Image 1 (cartoon, rainbow, N blue to C red):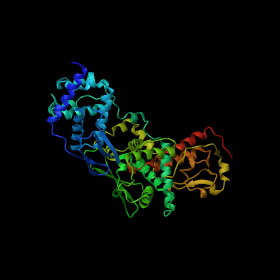
Image 2: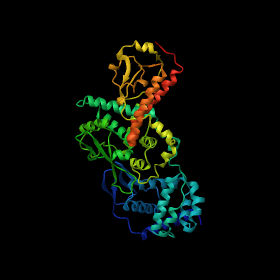
Image 3: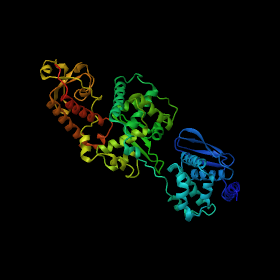
Image 4: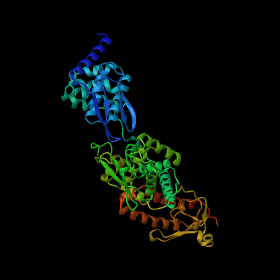
Length: 501
């Protein structure tokens, strides 16, 4: 039998099979989970391009690339998925993956696959199909199509063989490779940049609540950044937040509800509390944002993703994604000692296993506690340490009182650690915590003073760590850690730097 005849017979078999199936409905209804409404595909049998709405954008499902007979099978496959509750974007992705595999390999291979007896399927799959697969996604699409053919009793396929198809192996892909390598985690110094910027903008907004200090687009960007930073929300979750999901209380607190996504129950939603200092951003945006759109940000998921990339590049000089924030927030929880249940709840996972990879990449418990001793959410902004000078006790005693750094954090007296070149009355930052990283700070060249400050601040951090671990994992919780690290670097620098009077 020649190759064209072999193709013709198979496509004729496709055409014959579809005539025995129930015809496609004249109207296919599917649920648009972005706009939260049902939509319809009209006349699916007579057109090879189905107009659909996916994630807030007009798109189409294209069947025109497949030959006659086969494209009808594919239409039934996609329609079956939509009518049984599969998301439109999932079925469109399946079709796209199958198309890429179809054009990337010999089409005879798929025909041989369909002619393979189910009892011989596993061996043929491993020897003939697996080498042609690019990854897990196209394997999943092919298996989905095969299961559909089983349910429709295509040729020798039978519903009893669906379990055999589901058990077929897929190319190994380390879903958590970037987590294990650490490349998806945002460095602490860049986390501080984002937290500091949100704190600074919020402070400015609070100082002048009735003025338009920021444009609507800037407010929107900072609100999105805060949701990524604080709770690691996905772009799809942020884009699906509606105006009714933002609840503002008389106390000034703000709660936001969002869909969990990737859950069996589409209605599953979670509620989170916005960090109090950043609530002003949401209030200002809600007050000044245009009223017609139903969605709070009026952004599609792709636009949210682009916003995150743009603002991180502008603030930190490096592009980060919403996924990077999600992984980083999860790792912060684990590193601060949160339980697996807390991590699963934070991520919106239905099982405890998905978050276990963060424990695998974390250090041992003793190191976690020591690291946690360097973290707290209540302190002011930190910049990278840049010490070039030290000060003698004699010179410090002859310094004016307003330039001697000191304070009472949580009732702990800390004073005489060094000199501020501009004077504390002219500084808007909290001394003690900001001075060690400030270019205007000149440290006293007596290590025992800084050692005592380090010990006292660790007591403060420990009290926060013991009181509430989830609070200790909040974004600003990193700030005291960097402060204590800066004190340790100061102690190291004192060993080699010469004092200046």
